Length: 469
Image (cartoon, rainbow, N blue to C red; front, side, top):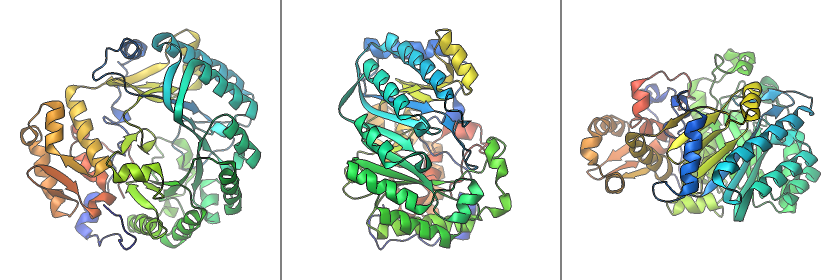
């Protein structure tokens, strides 16, 4: 792993760049959400909830997590691939919150009231689109339905353009102890190119206020690969962010998929940086944050050494979920709101993607689930393998064999042969009893994980994913 300030991006050969310059999943789940099927519906989700409620789950009940999707934004960011509703009419939130409360009631009717929750996250869209009063009502509704466990992580995504120190103080009163600020890039030209203008000083002042208020953790989101970015301009953003000392940093590669996401059609494709500049930005960011004392958690996350995510990395306790790397063990996730994706037992589910369809289902007393997946035994085996690689950078054959009662060399004969090719590129080291991701491979750990993705091999169409580099 990369763990010292002196390490830098290794020299990459042309063969390696050609091999790795391709799309691939980020593996916030396996199988990935593009494999969900419409034959999975409300009845399947209800059954998964019932199995948890009665304890009829393999290995007992895992912790419970809640995700709430607030889709509204006042303006569109051209890079955005989130499910959102662009509107300046804040009154639209009233109806949404009423239906959201009905969806919560449907879940509670199956699970029972007062279920302990170890993690609650509000995402979007822009959760801070809601007024202080609406946020208060939402949190009161959730607390009446569920019980936040002592020490629970309660987080919210904040658009700095819709927040102020007074808003942050109100969030703290409501019980939020973690903030995630959407920055993406501080360069003015890049901000104009993606229609998201927020001066550095605005973000700096918010972070100062958040520190004074006493939030336990502050995360900053960045994106590389945006229009008009260069290695030099992005290096300035990296230095500015590091100077603000957020506890965590999430660094994502921009996925240009205009055929899927309409706002991206406004991006001028000729302004996008070429692959070699993207590699330089990635390497420069990793080196820059390490120089500033951050721990490289993996793929898209950094954290200060004292942060719980860094401790989990050191102790081999990292996990990965729909929000990225996490200290939380595998949780059942109740996903609320339009398009929200959840996990319950051995199932994944996704709610309706349009407001109207979401409203119609809930008002008829049905779960708004429109697609999902029940994992097969093979899916569970491969999920364990992929998450071991993504989180620990090491796959121990014995642990997988014991957990799933398989013979690794036989079960993954083809995959291990493919890994030999990646070993030649310097991405991993393959022994008789383990796969170890190398420091070079840790930059491109998705490529190693993809070897074990059976679904991807059956349907190699990859336009739906961001590029590995």
